[in-house]
Image (cartoon, rainbow, N blue to C red; front, side, top):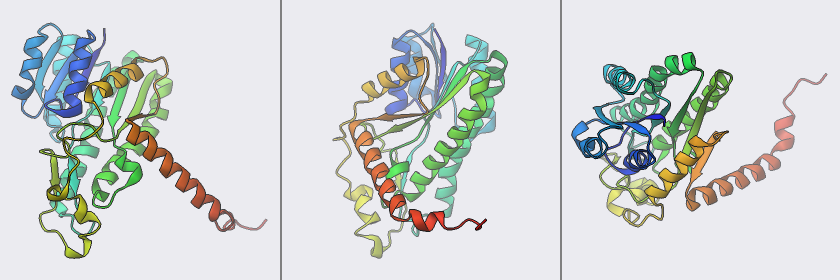
Length: 276
């Protein structure tokens, strides 16, 4: 039995992760900005679930959530950084304040929780850190430049973190989901207030008022949770876990395209060293 701390459990994948982990018999610190939204999980699993408030942009709440986990269950064995939301805007349309909030939540929020759990994980020489990314970090759709950017930052951060903590017995991994049937493209999705007409046929096609995907996604959150638990409990968790057929297909398509372009420009790329 391990203790998991999962951020952003009120809805979507975060809630699916929390429910599946509790069903598996683990202890789970179930967090949300409004703890009442996850109180039912604590009531359903009174011995193994702890519901607590956690806004990952708040240093004090991050520290308090980790302290509560350690007081109730002794340690945090698995941290899942799931809290976040979508933001759509052409790069030119993005509002400065909205973009800063996006980075504050996804990037700096992830850093806060990592720093909060690492000292105890280092002392025990064990632990797992899971950071939620998105296939959007690879495919970079029109209108999702800022969201892709925060997820790409999380992935790069995790890649370095993995190398730093592996010798200490700690695993770090990234999860890249495709489209899952959650409210991500509905209530949780934000966008720029003022669209620019010149982007109507690119970023504009993905605005909420034009989106037909919500409610029809192929991904099953319960299956995503099962896959995540299996990866975390494996002897050698991967750096990158893709979730969904769409994520796997898109990743391979991007990878093939990059290889083709690298080959095309290889001579120019290799011609930049000093001639010895």
